[in-house]
Length: 252
Image (cartoon, rainbow, N blue to C red; front, side, top):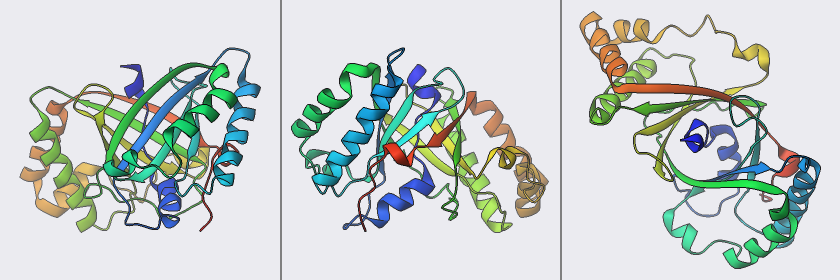
């Protein structure tokens, strides 16, 4: 359950990753949550920097993006992600898995206390990602859907996304679905934040119910909100910060 409190793939950094990809990008994100051992934070970060240099030397075509979790029960854990993957890419990585593992164990492994891996699918039909490449933080909301209510949840989110688009809402968010590595019915919605001030409510973004009402009428708005309320079992929020100094971004 701890894994599912955070993990996502993050639209602005994914755009950077995809710009460096030679092939048509996929919609799978491979995620690792790495928790440094107590008192070994410096060793962990130094190891990550050395590993980023190693990927550069190998001319790795696939980016490796590192984020530091700032709030919630995973505070102090790092998220290491590869974005824009096809499932087949995992069978033939740019750098062989065996070589990558040797470097991980050599440079990072001894400083890591816990490691959890998961795979996520991007949901572009639901998303309206920001094109602003200056986001310093990413707000992450994890949603757990009640068993047997998946259809209600998906239909409501699709309708909500349609309303936001129809009303030209300035709201920007990206959706992702857990496909392996934890309980089913787990989704993440991410928001890019330029700074802490951007966490405040934006008066230009209307409440979802208002956009639904304007787009489809009161009856449909009520139906969508009721389906959301009945299908979502719980939510959990976290904040994380991109660490470019620990990441590997391939040259364009």
